[in-house]
Length: 196
Ligand code: ADP
Image (cartoon, rainbow, N blue to C red; front, side, top):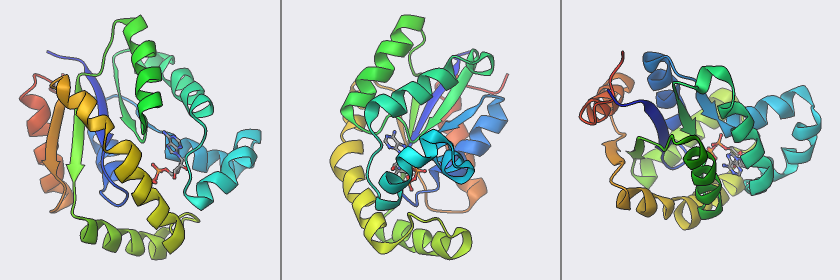
């Protein structure tokens, strides 16, 4: 059996947050979403929240140092010892290098990267629905456009690095929640990553 040290990647509106939580629950590992951590801090008005609110609302990336520290702290907690699922981190080349250094020092590299593939049109449609349903401050036209552009220019290229390592599974993200979930778990099972 291979440990579940997972990363889920996909454009905004691809459903990676929803699927990430489901996969993490199925494997009994924590889902670590940097976006969720930031949003929770903004909501609670913490020092971190105050620092990042304007950045997030504008759709820009929070500085790598700050984000890296949050992820390292979270992965150092006991419940992440047996595996974890990262959602939203790493998102650029610098963050890949930071994460590699941290995981290599533990001798625990990522074992699979799930790439959720969703056509641009579909993800924009889902985002506007989410804007109505959840009222996220960063789901406005300007911020969405910026985040999608950053995804194309900074996040998509990191997939090449993981592809070279042979750990990327491309999963079709169009379909029902159950269908997409089945596809993800089937791809992981093919790598020997199964629920113990
Ligand atoms: P989305 O994928 O829809 O942009 P996320 O919840 O993943 O939503 O992220 C929301 C925001 O949080 C980002 O636009 C960015 O400002 C910040 N953020 C999340 N993850 C990172 C990261 N790894 N590096 C820098 N900023 C991040």
